[in-house]
Amino acid sequence: MQRQRSNADILVVLGATAQHNFTLRGITRNLQSKIAQELQRMGIEMLEANLDSLASLSKAFSDATYIFATTDSNQNIFHAIQHPEVLHPGQTAPAVTTPKLRRMVWSSLPSPRKWSGGLYTKVTMFDTKDDILEIIKAKPELQAKTSTLLVGFYATNALNVPELYGPRLESDGVYELALPMSGEIPVPMADLDSDMGKWVKALFEAAPGLTLVGSTELITWAEWLRLWAKHNGVSARYRRASTAEYSARVEGISDAVSEEFAFIEQYGFTGGDKSVVYPDQVRQSGITIERSSMEEHIARCDWSSILGGHNFTS
Image: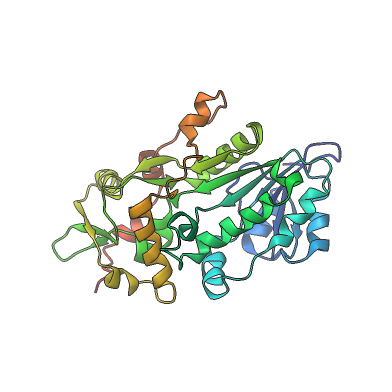
């Protein structure tokens, strides 16, 4: 892939991770990271910028036509819990002075604190993203060009965080998925490799002000497990884990994760926000978003790390 010419439209991605499918210029905290170097080898322009530095972001946003802004999910979880008062309003300010900007998409999450009326206050990794969205909305010039993407549960969680989301082989030979919520409540699951770029592109094409739930499929945990077991030819069951049991697996963030599941069970992933839309609704408006499914994602993955028989409860 060649770098874009100076007169071509420029898409700037904050927190570039190769899962946006539309990246021309990526912004990262660390140009020496493995992912940043891989993107550079692909011919993608990568710039290092500090999210607290107006000067570095002004350079990164220079001549941007489209901006996709996100945060590092793993760092955001721990940083938001330890420092919930710290935001990064500086990362959106330079976009206001980018004359070519047509659309900005902010990757946010629903705020349990807001949608529960203060009942759930410890899911700060969600709340922080929504707080930044409010900063964006406070800038009329930027709000007029901004849409929001609420990405659901990562479909790769079972592989990347098996101690939290992976089925575990029990002594009776059955794989068990145990989470601290009902297995019969639909949640949005997101196949980032397949769909992230499609969602962002759709938001670039749609009128501003849209809030899209990044959902490859609305599916219950029990149904996801059934598809997983069928693909792998094993027996499986879903069990509701106690909060205490699950908290023991997530040292340091147990309160936040426990409240996250409790909030979703009580209020739904979006907290009851009536303004959100799902990919099917965007398709009905005439914007093309190719369909994919959890069954396809499961079939595409290598599950040998879980099927190896490691029992996390032992």
